[in-house]
Length: 78
Image (cartoon, rainbow, N blue to C red; front, side, top):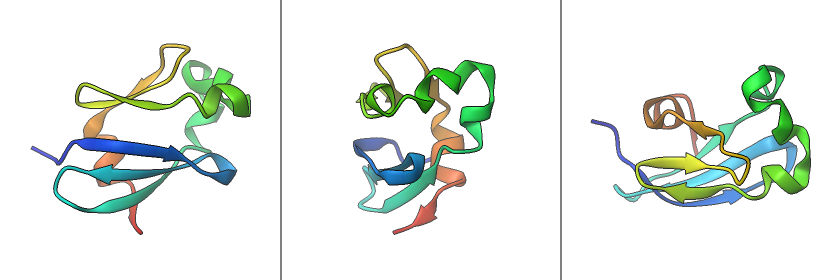
């Protein structure tokens, strides 16, 4: 089981700074996902910035979420 996020901060260029329960901080680049129809609304920076921790993952005000494994395994160390 991968560590779960405990805090998130939206950054420039559609990146997320994610603080995980194990003490790690990582950067996740959302730019490629924004080309997918499910995430395309998040190209709007105001909507992108609504990201928050929800249960075991991240969620936006528009209902999109992301797989916790994707988030942890495909982010880079800060």
